[in-house]
Length: 444
Image (cartoon, rainbow, N blue to C red; front, side, top):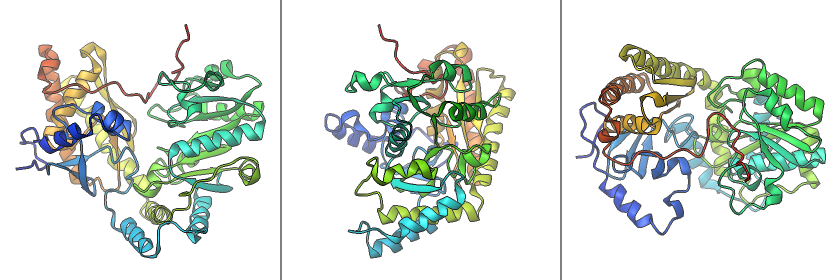
């Protein structure tokens, strides 16, 4: 019988997941469309690989096992799976059509909503993925300044200008690699040392997990103004979640351009570029940024319904409150257990458990925790991506599961047999860094 959410579960039967996975091998490169969803980020042999249904904060895999989900689609499900108001808006629009031969009124209606919420949204454009929007922002910045180089900090998608700074830059011309650079978060000197007269834009995630220190974001904004550099906030995670108006609203800093996706449509594929009119006007005739599906109406209907719900229910406040219980609860448990090698960091709405190498390989520690949480019915990668559907009961149960799982980890650390406790292959290193953003490979 498939597992329910229980502290007394056996490890789940994942035979159908494995069957699908074996069919994908050799057919789908890397077997996944999204790296963070792929099998490398889960304990192979224990974790399910394919999900088929979600409701609220719960999901079911192909074998019928039920879990509380803290990945939430890697961020988009700000309200939760199959959220009635959003789904009803999609169904209603579906009756009239999805993609049309001319523009749709929702393009205007949603843009007007965003302009009221996002501080820098003097103009608004849509696309489908985060990488589309960040690449359009970079192109606008180059057109506006007449300069070429880009400084980036964080994760900004799969397009050439960004992946050029990573170790996975095969297939990207050296000429592109030569004009993309990185800097370290909270290190204004690393920005100053990277700046020259050919820098067109600085793009960063305003926060990932670390908080800005010593007025870092304000200093960055001032520096951009002084050097005629376009400041771009990549708000894929912070937008409509940290505050309704994102990090712009939260910190009171208005960037020249900003990009959004994830939380704004509760799972439907859309990305949004906002910015100051004088820069965005270049998208009229100077730059080319168009896509067949940019005005696709189901996603726009979802955006409208999602924003209304985020606003009317004050969802950012809820995410902060529920996330605080988990983050603080995690840290209370580890203090009680005397485990000074793990802690939860970050903002309440999206915290992350970290593991210190003094207790062994951090990835193996994380893998054992993940294994034990999955056994207890919680899909857990070390992140707590909060949604409006994470109930008090979900949080209370998750803390119980965390306490039991952390006790297992503590026992394994004391016996120095963490690896032996794993029933499958440990998770692989993440491509996406959460600190020390200077990823540009050293050329020999």
